[in-house]
Image (cartoon, rainbow, N blue to C red; front, side):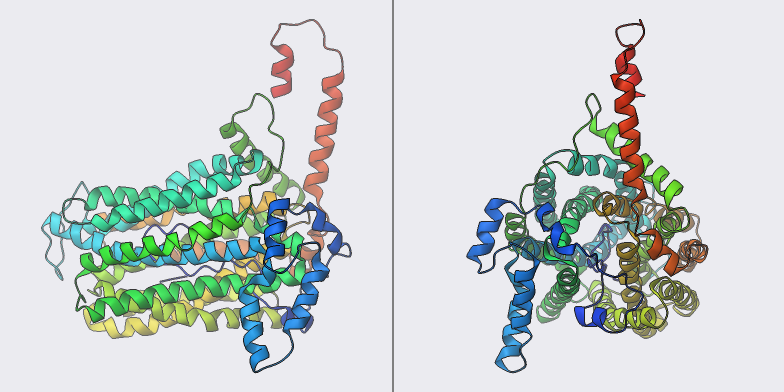
Length: 573
């Protein structure tokens, strides 16, 4: 079922993943969210550290708003809060202009782009399974043990997710090093956007002879989607510093609405097209049309989006003599050690919970497509309608999560979400047993939508409020990595079960284990007040600076007589 922006790869199925790290508006913050930490006293002073460059400042002025500081934006907000009628329309339009901040506009456009990519994979997945089944000689609606390229056709989508997940786990640290240690963050984003668009265009020619190469391209595209997400996410911390905490809360809500609206719009367009042209049940035709629509969609969103995001200098100087691969994995290791040493009762358990719960939730959106096609015998249009219902249901789900978090705290709300998510999934596996239960799936689609709409904003919110000030950039990349590091494992388990001849309900049920492990780590995490208290002090940066100073002092000492490479070897160690 669909689940934000996360960054999780769109390997196969659609996901509604809110890009927002904060799921509330400024009105909520001013009222009863007493679990939010107080804003920093020097909030306005951090604007000078923004990534905003002179050329971007000029383009912002051309749009009617300068980026000289937070106060100007607050004044703009005050003007917009005037009232209803024409003023209300003006407020809505002004909100979608993001106060004239080009970086926020660009981020929103890229969010819309990703919404189209995610939803296009629903139609592509159904077509790939249909073509693989035909190639293996399987009859629609009958149990089939035939294989193609060594696997059952019903394992194709989870295999794509498996390959994408493994590539991401091994390569994302290197991409993170390029983003942080070189001035090529924007180039990485533009390249991945171009690659994705080209592949979407190539997949228009999906047919019975090209389906397997298209499946391989889809696995690579899943990884490139994660590259795109990592490059875009790197802009968020500086955007937040440049506009201020309250303004960023509002932007975050708008980013979520943009992606949600994009996913809904894309699904409605494609479902209407398939019904209007009489293509219901012709999954390959629908997928080809969907890919063509997606290419146009991406051209109108990727291009202006990346034009508004600036090139930025390297966040950190590159250590001499070290490759980006070594830097990437070393940085991940140092982050793990630092979190374990300084935030063992909070961030350590949080990131472990994210790794497992995210793997289960992400795989759920992948496995559900195969389950609906093979067990419930739905066609591509019916699957798309289920996803449309799930997306719509995620709205009350997000509000429910927000309500529970207000009454308790974000960690407790997330725990209750995982418990309820688990119970609904267990019930679904034993109720949705065949085509005669197809109508009931629409009900479960709504229930799962509520759970996913509750899940992702809470995950992002806990991260945002538990990160030590000054560590946002580094830990944002680590957060993205944790969300993808074991996403390959649930599809692998599902594939093994499916290839062993077990009913798919057991493969769907296996995802519950990942949700429960995530719940376990949240249970042993420190209390919410302790988490907020720990986030007030940036112990990791202080310790790192002390180690660097100590290393510099050691390097300045005269060395004893030794071989020509000794000094360099000592520095590397």
